[in-house]
Structure formats: C-alpha cells, structure tokens
Image (cartoon, rainbow, N blue to C red; front, side, top):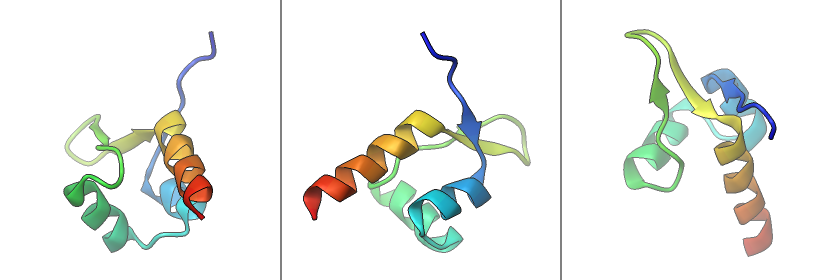
Length: 61
C-alpha cells in the first residue's frame, strides 16, 4: 500500500488551476474535499483526494 501524501494550497492551486479563493469557495460548497488542519497555520489536502477530483472533472467533459 502506498503512503498517503499531503499537499498544501499552492500545490492544490497548481494541480487544479483554481485560484485560492475559488478553492475555499468550492470547499465550502462541497465541490472540493475538505482539508485537514494540522495546526493553526497549516492546512493540507490528501493528494489522492485532489487527484480523484481532477479525474472526476476530466470525465465530465
């Protein structure tokens, strides 16, 4: 089994092509997976969940 990787918002922005504000809006609306809060200033997403989101979008096109 592969170890889960975590990515921060700049990498999420790069992978999805979305702006920071759009990412947070999509999280709020349930369109993007909720992030994990590691500390007061550090928020991460599971890379596998972001990849699944990207794959879902590509299938919808």
